[in-house]
Image 1 (cartoon, rainbow, N blue to C red):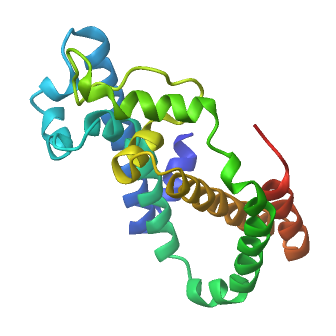
Image 2 (spheres, helix red, strand yellow):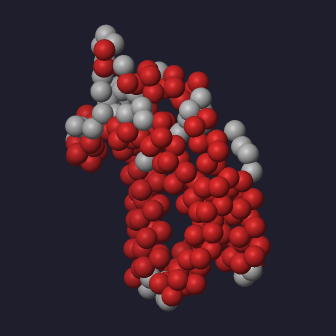
Amino acid sequence: MLGILKKYFKEGRSSKLIWIIVLSSILFNLGATRFELTTNLNLEDHTFYGIFLAPFSDIRYGHFIARKLFLVVIAFIVLGIWLIKQKNLLENLKKTLRYFIFIGLILALSRILTFDFWFYNDDIRFFQFHTFAPTQENFNPQASWGPIGFHPIAILLLALNWFGINYALYNILGLAFYFLAGTAIFILVNKLQKDKFTSLAAAIFFLTTPTY
């Protein structure tokens, strides 16, 4: 393990920066988790961690969203640094742009007929609860409990802040994430197989296969 770390640290400043961000964020997250588990206090009450949550205090459920999406944001920052350091990035993106457009077209065609049917009972129940939550006794804008089920709770709460209960915008957001997942599969498979046809087939299979 130490040998692997030394190898990556020798590759340049960008690798060092990525390792520093990843390791410090993991320690940061572990420290925050330990504080919540070993005390009866909320994370925003901590002298140090409270500073980071303060900007989200005016956002409904902001503390919960910030905590849940912290590592996700770190992952995207690391990905961004890695992409910036890639040679000929724009040139490679131009070569694959038509594949991305095709993936988006296939996604739209395969989902457009069922677009109005995605807002099922669990979704309606979730959004109704959190829409009318302020009218309930002892409502806390930074507490987010109620009907949750198997939803990605932080993303849905963020969507609730942005769109309210507008199901069309909610579904468009879901499609956007789905498109990013499809393009990521295309890039990953192409990196492994060096075959754009196989990569495109894998992405299309993912996008068009019915799932629950």
